[in-house]
Image (cartoon, rainbow, N blue to C red; front, side, top):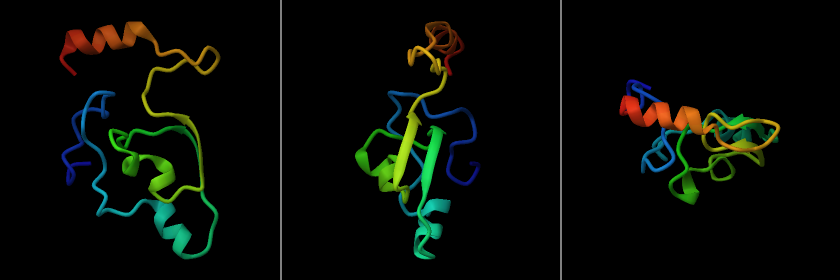
Amino acid sequence: QIHTGLQHFVIRPAQPNGLPLSLPTLADCLKKQRYSTHIIGKWHLGFFKKSYTPIHRGFDSFYGYFVGAVDYFTHMRNVTISYINKQLKC
């Protein structure tokens, strides 16, 4: 994280940032060895452009969320967390 400038906090929904496309993910490396790759959970590596999403970063499938604080049962984002983040200027 420190080498990419992403060490301070997770990438927020409106933030135009992500893991640089020049850096391979583990999935990219595994694909070269002919593995199938799948991800379940949160993706905190950026999603402001399609090229930054898991399917375009080496994963065959993705089941999860692009942002944190999402309830796994209702699939709704926790508004309280969003409000706290705004107050903290995170």
